[in-house]
Image 1 (spheres, rainbow, N blue to C red):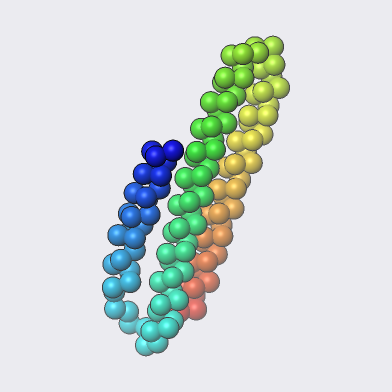
Image 2 (image 1 turned 120 degrees about the vertical axis):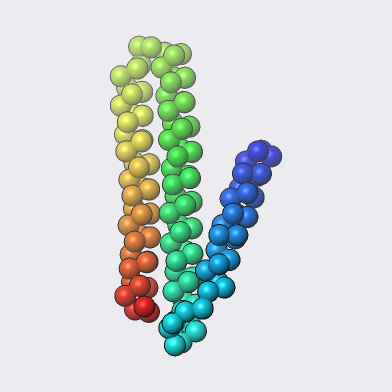
Length: 115
């Protein structure tokens, strides 16, 4: 558990470090409230896609390892396990694609309004 906690803390630290220049920049937009909302939308979009990709990769790795273990324990059930594995991987990948679409929508709506 400590390795996961350490990885999460490093991820959050890097996100904070990489987001700091966005918050320090001066913009050409006359209203600071509009510029602030645009910066927040950029950070939110980046956070959504980062977390969904990380979670999707973790879930795919866990599904593949579990399927390999199941096939090694019961070779006769390999076709059923393989089908369920592929179906699960498709659903996980679809979730990541939906997160990408939501991120693009967030960025494009804010981009069109405020810049």
